[in-house]
Image 1 (cartoon, rainbow, N blue to C red):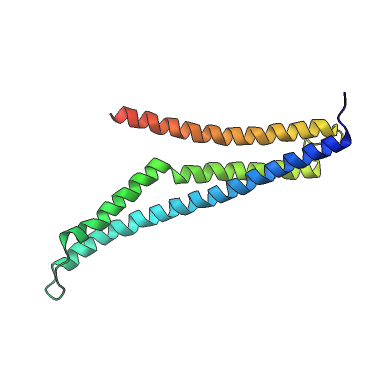
Image 2: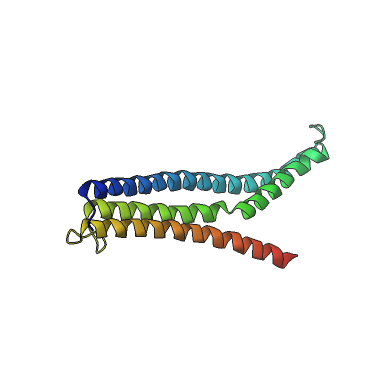
Length: 162
């Protein structure tokens, strides 16, 4: 039994829309992870550097003494940011989502231009569509696997410390 051209066209449209939706999601979450990573790194450095400056200024006769809690606050915040960075792994998420995003862009381009062994014009359109869906699904599953492995690694590392 062969599929009607309309059915193939509808399924192709759905496959492309799904891939484009994944591209939008990966682009958005990649950007969020990148911004979180950079913000946390800058915060740790800036807050860590601010602590000795506050201590130096607190003993000056010209300036009133800076309260101890305020002197300690930047170091405490720096530690919190460093801990959250380790807990949420924004750098690893940024890299993993960047790789997935570029792979999805590449597959969509190859599918639309009917290039590569998976989408060649010599292939039956149904076979090319099947290849596209399978490869997009593989990219998504690989990124999910990277995320899962990162979570398991974090759990394993935390259990070793106990």
